[in-house]
Image (tube, rainbow, N blue to C red):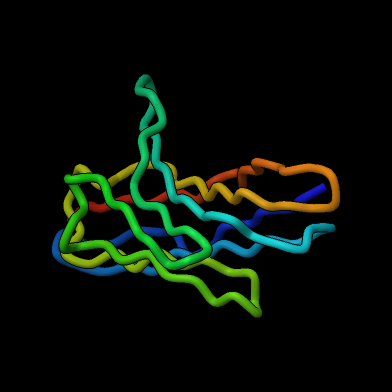
Length: 119
């Protein structure tokens, strides 16, 4: 079982910054990819950013140039640096991790962390 825990959400002013963290633990020997997603009530969860084991990143058009995803492999942690925040960035942010263990691959989610951008 893979445990995924997000942290770092909170309240920020428009134009401000926040840094989200997500740590994965459990019985796996490889992390193949990480992803950050977000969801507002009544809407579908949407992709924010992903990063593969090789370091290839992908961003939603709405956050390109403002957000940056990065990892700390030894710590099994992924970060999402969010700059120039806008009110429309307000959402619950969820971390996703794709891991590999002997004989199986897992796709695991955290419970989310709330980000609110408001003056």
